[in-house]
Image 1 (tube, rainbow, N blue to C red):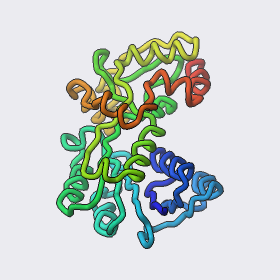
Image 2 (image 1 turned 60 degrees about the vertical axis):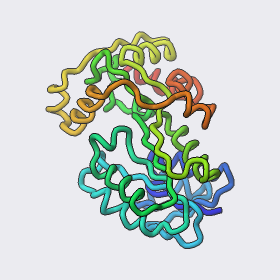
Image 3 (image 1 turned 135 degrees about the vertical axis):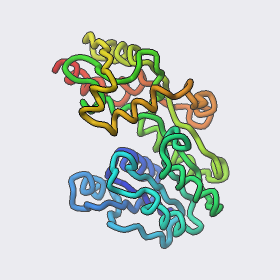
Image 4 (image 1 turned 45 degrees about the vertical axis):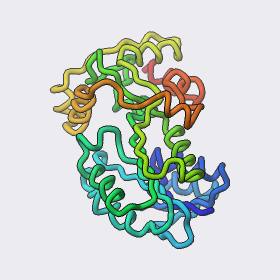
Length: 271
């Protein structure tokens, strides 16, 4: 069986490609830079690297787009031809949590999929647990400094779990065809995240609230994202239903211990 994976050198695309390779799929990965280090590493694992999607002879398509992280790109314009060209292949579109409220381009892609009656599953991932390995997302200088309000429960998902849901949708399309899943494995407040990192690393990592206006001066786009998270109601993901589909769904604590993230965060907490 062959699958096309868009954005294969990104966090989600790479995780999906590796999971599907392990499951025995032939993976055709789409990237703008096939000579880059990430692309070459995936090619060495068996991914066929291409610069433009080709859907001939494929049974499945994983579509993801950087969206707000690449404001110079038009997500709907980029993905409309993909959705229309997918044919009989089952499409998994990775949108975003709250797309219907805050990300019009992603929601427009969701609507296009529904309007065309494409065989598809829509995944709406929450914030990646892996983001905490990036100092831009708050863990730096020995503290967790974020614009999330202390009482805001941030929904979190590991990219390996996104890949697991994509793999399930491809393996059993009848089970998830036509469904939209809000994806999260945990929902924690910033002090709870700081406490989990402290416990995992053995280093006291305090939570420091960053005023939203201070963040806006540095990165207005990130500020808008945090404003959205601060305004969201209680977690929307149905953890019980998600674990019925994927029993190994990771909590933040599990992700810290299972994936090797603790060692990386230990270094981050020290500096």
